[in-house]
Length: 245
Image (cartoon, rainbow, N blue to C red):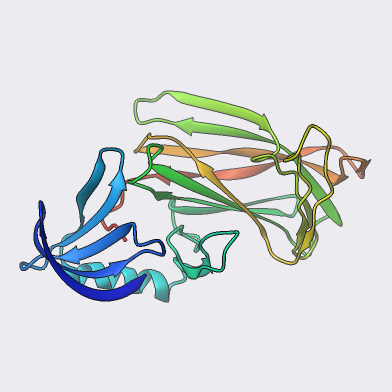
C-alpha cells in the first residue's frame, strides 16, 4: 500500500485519496463524513465500492491484521521485485484461514475477496512437510476439491497436480518444484527452502465453503516409498468481508 493524498470528485462524492495498491489500479479514499471507498477496474469498468464503516475503523482493522500476522509481507508478483503486504490471510483463524496436518503434511488454506475479478475469490494453499513427518519426502499427485454452496449444493473438482505443478516436499521444509508446464513429460524443478504455495480462483460463489484433499506419494512418483494417501484441506470460507483494502 502506498500512502498519498489527492482530492477528487467522483460518483462516490468528494474524496481524499490516501492509498493505492502495487499497480495503482486500486485506489482508496475517504469522504468528508469519514466513510471509506475503494476504486478498481472491475467487471463493469471503473467502480467505487464502500470499503468500511469509517476511516478510523478501516485503519484499526488493517493495523490489527498486521499486528496479528493475519497479513504478512510477501512478493506480490512472482516474476518481479514487488515486496509488499499480501492481503491473503496467513494466520490460522476460524474458517477464514484453516490448518490441517495429515501424515506430517501441513496444509494452510485461505481465500481473499478479489472484487475486481470475475471469479471474485482467490484462494491460497500453503504446503509444508513437517520435521517429524513419517517420510523424508512426499510428492503431490492430484487435488480433490469440494465447494459447498449456501443453497446446500456441492460442486466437486478433481485434477492432476496443481496448476501444472507436482512439488516434492522435504521433511523440515523446502521443496523441489517439479512440473508439466512445457509438455506432457515431468520436468525436474528447482529446489527451494520455503513452503510451497500456490494460488488460483474459486469462482463467484460468496457464502460458500471450500476444502477437500490433496493426494501425495511418499518418496517420489518415480521412486515410491509407500502407499499414496490423501492430506486433508480443512474447509475455509468464501466470504465478502466488511472491510476492503
